[in-house]
Length: 486
Image (cartoon, rainbow, N blue to C red; front, side):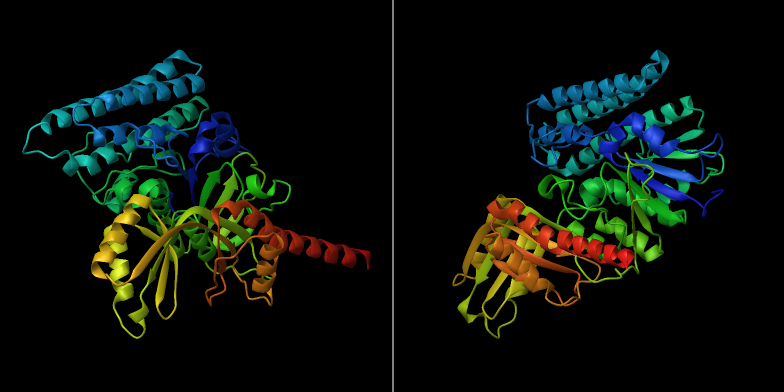
């Protein structure tokens, strides 16, 4: 690997990828003279909506090609869905490439892969129609193969586009298309960059990487960020950069209003982890771990505001003034309450509950307990949680186990060690008629979590943001104005 060490590794999200003109102008070419395009590595996501079509809708769970194939016995609806996904990808090509030769090159590349996948799935479908062969044994591999299509499409297109602009872009295909070798993720990355010269070449890398670990099955939809992180670590990048469609802000502007939120200029990886736990991912926690351990700062930038420096996330940052930086939360949380009168002083209940939740692949957001009650706040399907409850009732027939849908709202900051902050937050919720069902405040003073009814989620977010962010900003502005006047 040549020219490594004094470079950045940058990731472009799916929504930004869909705004092709903006990423070319604002990310790849902005303020750069000819020949000054290099010493950067770009990892690209699939265009917005493409992975949903190939797998399943991330928000609604509506099945895509994979979901239909996984549930099919004799039904061939998955093949029609694959054709529909191919039409969508070719339509994207049509929007991007005005030149007929480029459009044909993009279409031929994509259709070759689509038809290769279709042929493979047809063979697998026929094979599994015979008794000795089980479709379920191959589904992980099918998911990986379908996932790879989206990132190969966007990376190949981006490479073609940049070459048209005079950039020596290199398509780095980590998807393992027709490859017989199964390397680890690190081995795959190192071998793929072995002959690249960053001083003269601009690598455009697929966000999906075929590897022994199985990216999509291990990391879910966060696989692109894990690839991005490992490339940054292994190539010793000076900085990692994520280009998103919005700034990392103090709250969701759709809830509190765009005029009320403020951009987060700096924060730390601890805060990023808390955001991830609340479903507001600045970066996947496994990706953040690698960057943090390697001492690589992460910059989150708005694709559509290229002159803004964005948000810098590092390990050692602590805000100069204690206080909340972000107010966020998540709906659809399942509160599982386990009550056993005879629990006091008896060990084993918590371990049994955790083992059951793990067996059903149910994620834990938070938990609380007292003498005879343990409550877990969970992310997962209601169906899976009900199965877990049935198992627990069989193990503990005298326990009372209940489930309730709630929301969690959280005030997060690099330093919340300020007097009366919890009281102020609780009072703000009370004034907004938001009933607090539970409150968690770890001693590390990074976050405070409030459990509330789902129906009051947006009202709760707005109330906390006004009390902890907006009023603090207004007080700071008044103080600054007074100093200038003096």
